Image (cartoon, rainbow, N blue to C red; front, side, top):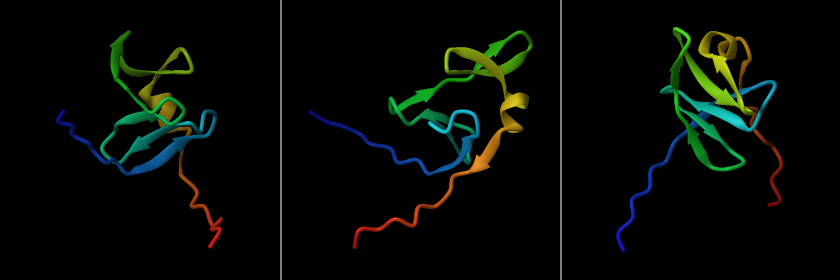
Length: 75
């Protein structure tokens, strides 16, 4: 069995839903399920399905924040 793995670096997250995180190349991932969220063209704008509701890209940009770096280290 052959497998391919791809590594993404997540940089931004949503303030209202921190489990939805974005890469620098505009890809959205759900950290709870580990799935990529696809862009959808709906109603004349690009949208993402966040928590079961379609939200436009312009409304999501207002909620983006940098992912805080964790300083908890057990070692």
